[in-house]
Image (cartoon, rainbow, N blue to C red; front, side, top):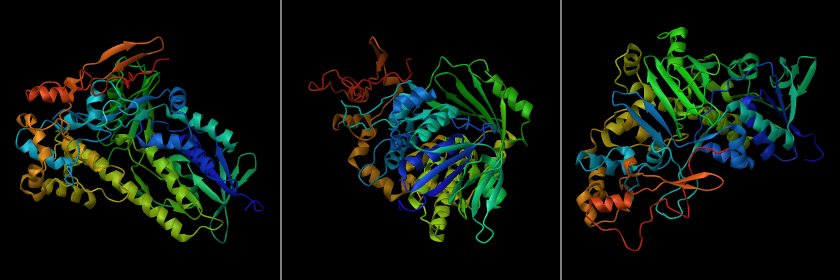
Length: 548
């Protein structure tokens, strides 16, 4: 391969999508490839995707990026969950990262919990989520809990400034060998025989030839849509919000290690705390709320003074009818758009880059590679779409916008999942489903969808007969260890102690789940374990805020 011309990959567009793609390609491809990125500083980027999910840590680790350097460069804060406020009359709930309870052998945890709730001995679902309890206490555990092997690591993601992240990755990619060209794309040149794109002509009569082109040009889709004419599948009938306003505000004193999504009469508002500011935005349907009303509602619900005028964003929820057409692959907003309700925007860029690396063609693009890429991307979009629709459909609000959401027929795939849950408490994770069974469980329960037939199902009877479910009953603790999978972890049981060092303040997060459970059962503390808590030294839980 060394005697041949390198396989030329051209990334059209910068921003988060372009620089994530370029950075990953230059990191994982060998010397037989060249990576070029074309962008224009005159063209702004959307840059509102500031909240992520834990998979972003794998992306950064794959690049070999030091996490602390990333946090400093992007003004990042830690994220343990997403809090949903006002989506039902029940108030609020969290979709927390990580486990909720533990399975009893082959019986999923929700069956034990549902049986315990039916018998009046199990607490709310949130009581069995470590991340939920820690998030409400504004604490986190970074790394393993070294004094409590029974506890898993606490998964976390980040809130960060998307513009700073793109700048950070640009520096990384250029140092690794990516060639950047500044300029506007004025023409997409194509082969008259195959229809493949052969080069991008920039202003100033410059031409950038390539073999494979990655379209990161945003909503417009300069290559995938304008040049190749790939159509768009509109999902507005399921997800009718079509506009957003974004505005930064002064940094809040009340830092929280979670994103907040607060429902309003015609959509919802986000709150994302960063080190240097708070990111805010309102997502709404233009049929139900005017731009002026949306701006007024957004500005009236900020933690601090606005630092700029609200920036408008118009979009159509949906996806491309093909993500890879000819020798062009659409990534980011060029491939489709789903509102950032579950912080999936940046992950979908990461997922697309991973697919490209797995299915990267040789000198010739095979139809099988293209078809497989499109199949996987198509299913991923559909699964995330269903998860977002669930939040809207399962509401009990009174406004016309929300009544219409309840009355809209669901996609068949989502309707089946809800009916399966209602009938048996079962949750099946399908192929290409980003969200785990635990994620679906938290939203199904949080949105108030009852699993009505579970007490009659065989799996529920199996959960009842399992010895581990007895932990639901306080009286049963006299006979069983609080190591059982649904030991109650209540935010009320968290009482932080503060230790100061010359360099930073560190907070220990004592989780008294065992001791609390034993006291409820009338048992004394185990002499062998002394007064140590589940989070005590030598692995202290760091205060989640960042000390400069």
